[in-house]
Length: 347
Ligand SMILES: C=CC1=C(C)c2cc3[nH]c(cc4nc(cc5[nH]c(cc1n2)c(C)c5CCC(=O)O)C(CCC(=O)O)=C4C)c(C)c3C=C
Ligand SMILES: [Fe+2]
Ligand SMILES: [Fe+2]
Image (tube, rainbow, N blue to C red; front, side, top):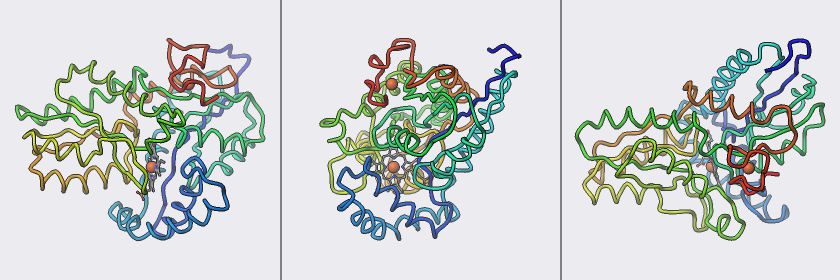
């Protein structure tokens, strides 16, 4: 809380991946994604033509997936709802301050350079970068933070939240949404499948990307909170020829079929609904589950604007405000980012 005579001008920047807003933006969105060195770690001279090739090859399939959601991605409208809920919450907590919440997407509008300009025009004393990725990855969080550093030229101290894999409100929100699905299953035996977006295995094994470890931290916290007996971690959305983290979500669904149990799918690395939940989990994997006799096949919704999750975000902002640099996420590493599960990579 602050002295009303010295109002702070605080810009909170929600960072996410972005998604195409219509069929015509699918290809340029995919190009931006594959042209990011955090996604394809090759020199620009090879990466850019490769990104052109992959985005054109993937275009038709991706367009068909986005068409199932009305043509484009719901990620921006979903993120706007989160921004509105967080604004309300922060203004309530800090009535003496001038708080504004912005959105910076990595691969489609509103892109980072545009948001950086808007924040520059606001003229903040403090900028808090808040990635909407509870678990840190070089492919997501680090890429977004780097883009911000490259483009923001405005005023104010800059701090960032690296990650919040075990934040109380985040775990509470997940637990409540899973409980509702388990109640739907009733007496039928079900396995909870925690499905995270995958990344190539070599990022973890060779580059020390802490994403897998942080996904596990989240899952262990939820499992403990709910006392789950039958559960597993799996990874979805594999793209390209490299070996990705496993087991894959389709393999985990097939295993549930062989074991004669139903499944509750939990998107454990996403905080809102988009193509990876509404199409991949619900439609594609839904067909697979039917084929393999996995019944019931249920899915917990993403945490979205649930009170507990917005509370977690507001606490994360609180931990990063009035300081510079990366805010380690939890009490165990407060003040020492080297002790944080991101291992200081974010700094
Ligand atoms: C935890 C979040 C995410 C990680 C880690 C991540 C890594 C990653 N993603 C790709 C390739 C694609 N991702 C795509 C969509 C997409 N990815 C995330 C999140 C993470 N990605 C989200 C939220 C979305 C949805 C965006 C939307 O449209 O709403 C896509 C596009 C869809 C498709 O064609 O399948 C691609 C491609 C890689 C290669 C990667 C790590 C190396
Ligand atoms: Fe992705
Ligand atoms: Fe950290």
